[in-house]
Every structure is written in structure tokens, then in C-alpha cells.
Image (tube, rainbow, N blue to C red; front, side, top):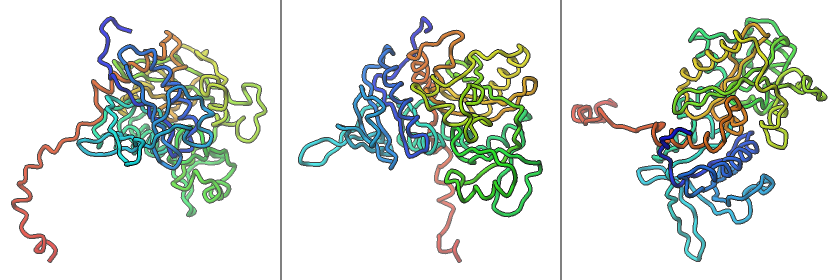
Length: 388
């Protein structure tokens, strides 16, 4: 770390879990963060807050393992709630005969929630309304990162290279390009619900069969010649890139390649391992021509600026070894992208300290009623007259 130590919060809440398909991965990230914070000088108290699949909050212990959450909240958990408003924040239920709650004096929240309302702006908006400092994307950045159709349109509008991406509708509209197609949920993180389909009829049949597509779906051309590349971007104290990684799909890594796993980078390829993303098969740093690597780094910075980068995000690309296409942005990556910072190495506590310093120094939102001076109300007249 630099010689001038950043201002850090003394009491840090770690938020993890959530009503999301990525609930389990979020638990792993949260438990890693709890341990990583123990090495951050200046953080005096760590308060793990588990968000259940049903949407309830619980204050839990610090030394837990992943298996403690197999059946939901672990033994000894205390129910908590997030309260909005000027005196908002997290309250935790106290024991005893008379039900009462205590406000947790949290200086900042370390957000480790992947997918769903933890990464689409819903949680971020609630924390804004509660007046809490927090890490990671703001509400707007989270929302655009989670909307694959909106993000793709933003990238193409900015003139950055991307594959075509169109909404898949139930009615008979042609996508404008030939199959086979990659079919993705419009809203969702990671690779859950993604499939390769041969034709439009098959894609439409998936709309009813795949629960992850019910809020919307997008189609892209399937290009078997393309492989995955990704890089993490650290936003504070300035934009800093990790090493470039080439994740290996199951077929590339010598796996069985069952289902779609040999065709696209799937959820199991990324996360099903002893350490999640940190144990997934990969080439890190990726062996790339310097010209391609330089272009990727430049594009990653462009994407980060477009989405208002905050915290650590991961930018995913597709490439054939010559061309590059911006694919997606993950605004709260698994394990907070810590495994990607290998050149030069960045210790996890230092990465977390940067996130927390940014939470205090660059708040995600400052609510303001500037301009609401009552002049419109004074000249409004009667509401009855306006309805006449």
C-alpha cells in the first residue's frame, strides 16, 4: 500500500447471499471477504450480514464455513432488517422477553452479492436511501451491467466492437443473422441460463422451459472460433487493470464437455471448485500477442468509464486471436476478482482496503432536493381545478 494510509471505516458490514441464482457463490465471496478484512489495518469490527434466499437478513458469526449455510441461516443467526430514511441502516433483533432491535453502527458495507437484486441496482438503491456508504457499483452502474441488452446497446452506441445482440420475443421476428445462436437471459449475472441453440424455433421453445429467461432473453450469433478473455478493473484510487485471463472451457481443460460446457464458458466452468473462480481452469496471465493485449486493456478502460466504474469490475471479451469483441461486464465479480491481480501481485487485504476507502471518499449517491423551493406549489392552484 502507499505510504499515506487511506481513511478506512472502523465498523464494516459484509453483505452476502441474496435471492439470486448466484446465492451460493455470493456466500463464498462473502466468507472470503470476512477473512480478508481481518488483515486490513484500521478495520476494528467486522459484521457479517447474510441475505437469505427468501430475502431476509441475518447477522451471523465470523468464523463460518460454506457448509453452515446449506440449510439457510446458520445456528446462532440473529434476524436483522434494513431500514430506510435519515436514521436508516441495519437493525438487529435482540434476545429477551420483549422484542426490541439495536441499530448497528456501520461505517461502510462491503457488498459481496452476485446476481439478482444484489447486483442489479436494487440493493444499491436501498443502501442509498438508508444513507449508507458501500462498495462496488452505484445503482445506475449495477443496472446497466445486469441488463445484457442495454449494455450491448451502450457498447455499440459508443463505437466499441461487439457481436450483434437482439431481444428474443415470442412473436415471429427475425434476429437479422443466421443461427446457431447463443441464447442468454436478458437480466442475470454469470453464465446461468445460457444455452447454444441451432435455430429460432428451438430458441423460442426455451422461453417457456427456462426459468431464467422469463424476464427476457437475448440472442447472439454463435461463433465457435471465439474464445474467452477477461480482465479486472480496479477503480480506486485510479483505474488499474489486472492481468489478462483466458478462462478454459471444460473441453479445453480436458473435461467431459457434457451439455453446452464444451461450446461456451458455463457456470460450472467458472464456479464449481474448491475455491470458486480461484480454482477454475485458466491461463493466467494469458499468452497473447502484445498488440491484442494492448487493445484489450484500452477497451477495458473504455468500458469501465462508460459504466461509471466503482469498486472492482470484470470486463469479459471474445476473441479469435485477432479481433476483439466486448461481451459483458460483471460489476461484482466472484471473489471480487482477487485472483486476477497477479502481475503485480495485489494482496487481498489491500484490495479490500481500496474498496472501503472508495466507499468513504467517493460515495455512490448524494441525495439532494436542490431546486425544490416551493415555487411550483405556490403557483399550482387547486388540485380539483387541474382534474376538471
